[in-house]
Image (cartoon, rainbow over all chains, first blue to last red; front, top):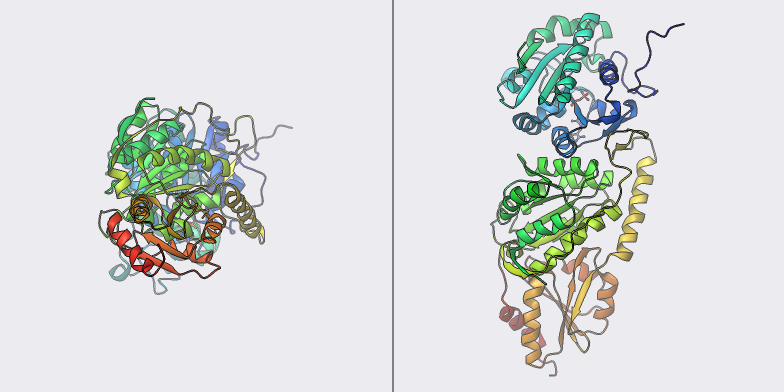
Length: 247
Length: 352
Ligand SMILES: Cc1ncc(C[n+]2csc(CCOP(=O)(O)OP(=O)(O)O)c2C)c(N)n1
């Protein structure tokens, strides 16, 4: 019998620590598939964030380092500059990348570091159990905005792709979602593009992925997917925000 | 042997290059701006990487990345910048990554000023970051010693997989002295733990998070054993005129250098005084100091702060000797006459 579907070699055979319906597992798998397909597993170095994905080294079957909260782009810079022929990526949540680590991501982008950034936007702080994130939508309820995010008090969400698109050092920016099979396939090709860019020495690529967090959104997994489609995607509109390579 | 006239910053930079350092990240701050300026030119010439980071937080994390993949890496700064690096230093300790961090101490707290100080002794020796950790701390008193200790720091840091701090100050940073270079390091230790891509081996990971109950406690005990080994093996100190001394100055770094002159002044006046100079502030030379103090009648602690190292001197003062403190905080630098005058006040009534 022919095996037509199996675990990528880039993923370990591990029991998941993610909650039911969480998007991190899907995104891990997409990264694993892409790294297998590009045959770069043995030269990839991942930088894990502080957030739910801090345990990424338990799941990825290649070299992975932890980094302090928000500092992954600085850590990746150190690695990539010294090992320019290795493939270096960061995997970061919205609190990690767009709140505490805003300085690090903006300046890694401005320097045009030849790295790949996988930015998982789930609109909340998952690991600390559901506080407001810089990407929490107006009106969205979290444990620190129990009446819903009030822009008069809590300010506006940060649109990371739009923000970074103004930076000359950025080569590629795309926002995708994982709320349907179609969008998951699209996300995979975006991730692949971001890694390919690095292999071809094109420079800084970031893929923002709208991802469900049912437990902290207090929704079922199916409701979460609908929420991404109906609400989140309206505020954080999917699309290619920058492509210096044209097309 | 050829000699070179260099500032402390330049000497520290050359020492790191000679020790095989291939990565520097930093952020400008007086009085150590010459450090990144010099490195920005020299390191690329040597095939290394220089990055001017957007902050000291980013700089220490770039160094973290460089260390993760097995390279010798350095950052330098001065007090406010070193405060920002504390998170990174804690992570380096937790992850057991080598790195060398140079602090050209200036006056604080807050923005303070840009003049030399020894006010970061507590931060350096007690750990300014979170968690139960230790960093090895060297306190040079000349430009040559800054060179020598920086050169050594890379080996010690690799040996123990632990960051090493150099605590100097604005005087040593900016003063020019003629120094001798050491041989360039050619063969560096192999680092099997480094992340280089998992070709031909199982994947490596670097981490400081241990969620399984009991595992972090074991990790801490393991670190403790390492720290004990460092305490047993890496203590450095020097004694001057202690053979026949009845009175002892304890002082480190620049302040020890000034105190050394005070000892000479007092010796000329027939006072039997000596100087004890810790070179490693951690591990502190407790045993050695206790032994030397055993022969003394009075102790004088001289620092460019309001009294920090004095706590370590008190720890070994089992005989309850009188300890007199003279300190100049906030960028104040004592003269040797000033110190000897202070000491003489307390030697009144002593024979000789
Ligand atoms: C310096 C610091 N501040 C705060 C925390 C606590 N903390 C851990 S994860 C996290 C937020 C993570 O949220 P996000 O980046 O959105 O990732 P997610 O968990 O949602 O995947 C916070 C605040 C920390 N570990 N370190």
